[in-house]
Length: 123
Image (cartoon, rainbow, N blue to C red):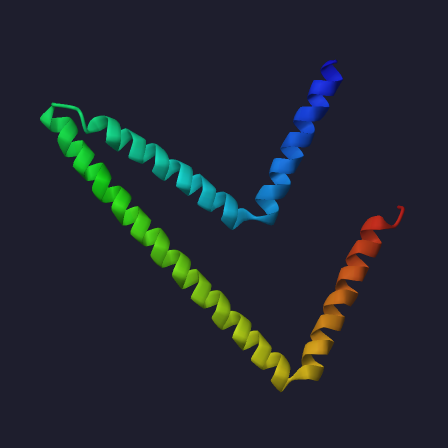
């Protein structure tokens, strides 16, 4: 029974690691969303506080949350623009120098084959 629990936990950890490796931006966005939600809950709970210090902290937290949301929105748009620009530059390079591009890909595949061949070869 213990082995079954350990193997299940191990499988869950492997799945989580795979998701983190395959989709780091999605995981980071989800973590930020959770953090913002928690901060919003805290701000809502502080809304009923009568203490002036808590009211001041609430206003600061609201301002910080608004700035964070704006920065994330701007950063996401900027990142998308940069990705589109890099894609366009790559396509232009391949169109201008198709043989060079094929050569670079072939060298990369050769290097990858050599590395994996050595890693898999028995000692």
